[in-house]
Image 1 (cartoon, rainbow, N blue to C red):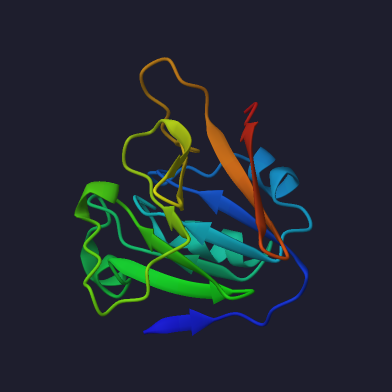
Image 2 (cartoon, rainbow, N blue to C red):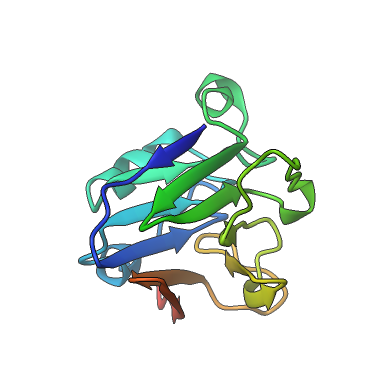
Length: 162
């Protein structure tokens, strides 16, 4: 089932993943003015979602480290439609399974690797915001902003300083 978001010509989405129970203070500034926040899993604690909801409406999926009753309530995958573009959100992109009768996504948002990524492949934009709360491999803590303007997509990564 696809969640339809009320469309407008210029839509700004904050994308975050792999907080692992730690939400840097600078996320609030990074996401100031966004219309929606997407958390691509490994949230760590339910209060992370509550804190993000204070910034903007938030959609979250379960990651492989989201244990307990609160984590089981989250979907493993979510599809969102904005401006006739379909965004598929899941934690591990390698678990993406598009069936032939599914609407093909225009954007796939994932986490898991702790590495920021923006890649176009066969007409699909793949976005991984990196890790906001538990960066690895010498990477800085990062989030991403996705602007949907009409039918165009712009992705920008922001480094978190705290």
